[in-house]
Length: 295
Length: 336
Image (cartoon, rainbow over all chains, first blue to last red; front, side, top):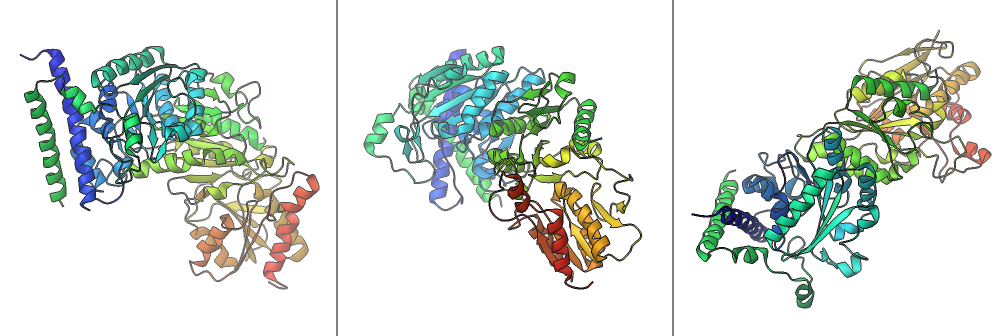
């Protein structure tokens, strides 16, 4: 009989596997010319989404960015709705108007304007506090996002006004084709400190460690009703969008972290792991068949 | 009462009627009560609903966006219309887009209010009329307050009916002027009505005692008192009788009522304080022309270039009553 911890492990692994299967399949579909437009996959970063979002309550707000599929699937377990939206279908999450990077469902939002999403997330959180709710808001940023001034405006205001906002920085060291040494001065981990904001920094793709840290950060925001800065050094295994990866072997080697899927899978029985990976792929296959064949 | 008081009362009325209305802005709390004193008294009455912001227009409007998405009705003050540039991304790429791009499922009841206009010697970056940057943005309504409508009602009803973001233009020179609503000694020379097909706060003014005007002058916001004075001069000195069309909602708007007015007179002059190229007047002329109206049409506005700070230079730069009169005379040539 599986223990609660094993159940939890399988479940976290299963979610990472589902996001991985979806994102990889998406890139294939683009390469085959079966989807148009652009997209930004989160291959390599799945554990950030699963670790953070797994600790949120349904009434918490999420504001994600252009690289939002992992966040969406971690939240709603709905690859089919997402694929419909990416394909511009009227029965997509946003009637096909938003597409890959402009998602909204219940208390989940994403926009393709990095930085700009951060004060919107702060407003959601402030709205909760003013309404006497326990809920918090989470904004997802990348290292590249740290170039936008409005991020710092929001840190300042969130600290001054007591806004229960969790800022999660997924620092994969690359903003499109620009490495962090060109785009990000100083230190990511302690950036919010001068605004009087507490922070936590992780350098791992281990979903258990991420989940445990995220739970602490989320709890800190929920109980203090103050902002919190959670930076995660992570690794973008895929391209920025599609086929636009100019990183050299040594660029990649310098930032590479263990594949979160492998790391989580290593803690399971091989048979369980393989079954879950198979299920994830089958589910994505079924989803693609259902959506692409449904005209 | 003056316009700033009327607007302030409108904000108070909105806050009384709906506990979800919040006020956010720089320097808006008492005792200062705002750079132009519009919000005086409000933070004392509602200390938990009036927020003093640091100098962060982008984050301020962004936080307003989030508040609007989460069930509140934020009214954000941008101190000077010139500073609205700091918030363009939040207005254009966030507020104005959320409803449309999320498939119609969300509403953003956000009001951003800001005073445009010069004539106070504040110089190039504190005197502009920058509404042109926003007019035409899908999903963003633009309303221009003026002194001849009941400003308390305009403000309160705009906030009460908020479903989608509104950029609410006030005017610095207007704040100290009397809110001339309905019939009073100053507007006695004109009949004021809301024409058919127009919005609730749109107005056409016609000179009493005359019918069959020769010219339609179109103006909004702070230009309204200038064109009223120009119309009076034109009547007295030139026997040119002008109807004045004053839209309150600038965008999105069906300009059929303006086209009808222009068609009736056969001549239309748009007077604006914003730069003419690609602006309000350009849109009015295009909207009227494409409806097939046969009319002589023109625009009068400021000189090109920055708005000078020196009093005489500023006066020479911005459109004055005399400029509207000259433009009307030129448009109508020698005769009617």
